[in-house]
Length: 151
Image (cartoon, rainbow, N blue to C red; front, side, top):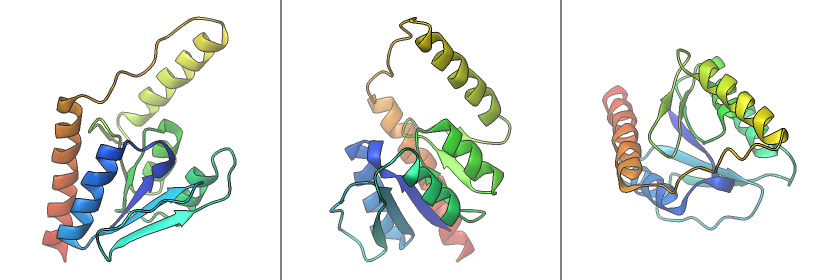
């Protein structure tokens, strides 16, 4: 198993949790971004810089991800694509997206995009709460434990 991170919009606190997880578990964590990242802390951490452009980082993750890998992203279309390839998707609020729930989330996202395009203010995402951070840490720990058992 490998962890892929859609790093351009990944909150710093989530990046720090992923670095700690890589350090203690040895899982390869690859941060994919269209800007240079300086993330260190473990030999199993990789940074992959891609060219700037719409969905370039997402497309690179989809190209490289394997079944059983974990993708960290708040991007629902990206989550849908990696789930179709047999990977798992976890957002920064600790919500695991699956075949059972990703299509409904994608439909809601498209609906809200349509409303925003019509001039309706749908509000933004709330700040990452302590409960969100804990939920993310809990889900990440489940994957780390699964990886360690399967070694």
